Amino acid sequence: QALPTLFLVLGLAQTHYSAMADAAEAHKSKTHREPAQLTQAECTEHAIGEKECGNAAFKAQDWNTAVGRYQEGLRYALYANGHHGEPLDEDTKQAAVALFSNCAAAHLKQGSPQFAVEVCTRALCLDMLNVKVYFRRAQAQLALGNHDHAIEDALRILDLEPENKEAEQLRLRATAEAKHSKDKNKAFCARMFG
Image (cartoon, rainbow, N blue to C red; front, top):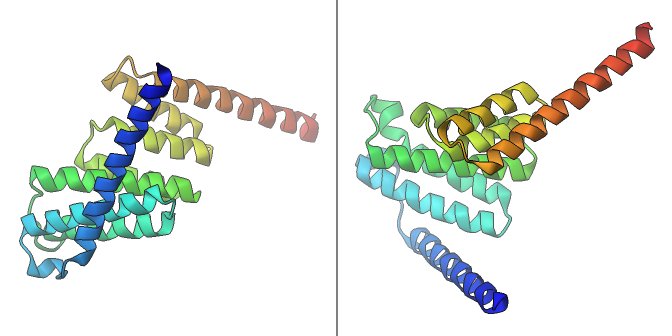
């Protein structure tokens, strides 16, 4: 019985990927204008199209293209706010947070955790309750060896979702790595000055 379930899951994943690829192709085939020529709603629509293109590149493990598409989407999503000081509507804000979050995931895949921390922090300025963004920032902090910051983000997730097992595992891993690093430094100092 597990085998038919697996085929069902794989079929659903393939259908989702196919729809994502179709959306990306439809977006690529459109004529594009600069954000200054568009309304905020049109900029948001364009940003979502760029997100779909970035997601297709991410799925293909083309991290550079994914990052570029997510950044281009952000250029459109944030245009009115950055150039005219207009507040972002809720749809645009959600699109921007998704673009920042996906960009962080691509930066992590590229081995660029510092960039991932930066884009996650920008996303959290728009949505301070986004668990996925906190998780990605904690992963990036851990990759940088910033154990205390990784633990802080994991604890923030657990404040928001006390039953989040992935956050608890991340917190435990960061705590263990922090202890290992501290013990290693202590042993090094003992050899140097002992």
